[in-house]
Image (cartoon, rainbow, N blue to C red; front, side, top):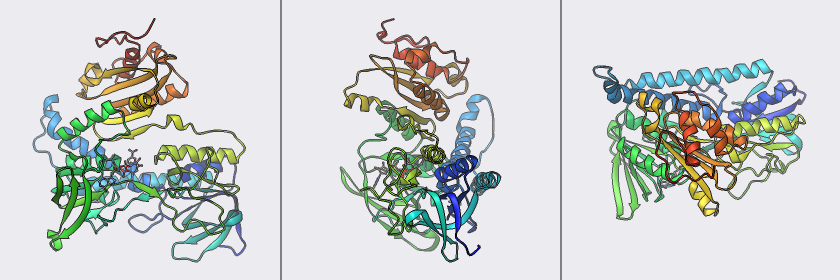
Length: 488
Ligand code: NAD
């Protein structure tokens, strides 16, 4: 806190995945870098890692993995020949373990900043004209910093809807849903998107009667249609009561003290319905977080949906100011933001990388997992493309059967003319890991034939990728193929 204006080569505003990747890479490239980050943890201590590490990707996976093991111990172990006796969930321990995992990782980012010489500034950042940045420490006065380049990475926040305002621990968003101290008996979820399915799964597995109210008539339209259809059936079998075409119109808190419940009114084809829940999770999307970020002279423009407007290289309309991650166009995914952050840091240093937005993988961490990259069959049909689809079921994969993971399929979609892989869609165990093979293949412009010619270890789930690629050309080995399509 000296009196002269502190200056940096790069100031990053935001310490989530996009921002901290940008900061670390900039420092690695020899630039004097600061990262301003306003997030505080549950004890009001400054914490790096953003939503992903603190309230998103990581804590949800800690609870998804724990709750999945609980289901396995209850229902699957007996078939494997393991007797467990009575299995019980210890929710406070699950939450404490989750918090421990989060603490290790956020501490890890702090250590990486330290090791790479990134100056971490805890507080709020605000961009002024000419790459001047106001930094307001928690509980302090704004001081001015100056930079050669500024990278904005403020992230996103949950969308709230007027009919369901958040209320203590009764009506919560994704953050509150990671903090329940006991299993709600009746759980309502508004939105059957990614968050609704993941957090709905956690509490459903632990014993909540879980009802998801989804406004759209179609289930998971962003995923491959065939997989969405199967997924809906599987999730319903797991006990998730997914109601489509259900638009929530009002909520009301009933009762007092520990007896409080939430009455939810929704509208569907049959008319107006009412349900009573002990807890309600609102999971209707996220929006870019730009409150207080831009001074009037900042020179950065927003687009019509409130995202910071950037070009393909993440440059804003202000000279030397970039924006990355959830606050700019494209999917709100940590890995997309990370690669944007790295691209911008490297471009500032004079390198020429680009982000390939055609190969951003998507993953939904339900069980089975759903993962995909590239185009869906329905998109290609709409575009009038001709293509071959090779589909291979987990039930025909030896390793999947040995592991008791026979639900799911792998679909490889290849151009009918060139055989180039256009999309890969996986539902099944380890889909999140298998999809990396598809991303790598597509980055190298592989054909389905290329994947079919490569040797995969046996027995592995990965062989399903190999077989689906062979199936796209009509000659999978462990499946009776439909009419062969390949000419050779
Ligand atoms: P989402 O867009 O995936 O799903 C929101 C759902 O809510 C939609 O299906 C929408 O139709 C529905 N909805 C909206 N208003 C409604 C209403 N009034 N009544 C009933 N339904 C309504 O958004 P999300 O699940 O909140 O996730 C937010 C963001 O976070 C997404 O961009 C997602 O990519 C990201 N995220 C990703 C992962 C992952 O990659 N595994 C996990 C969690 C979140």
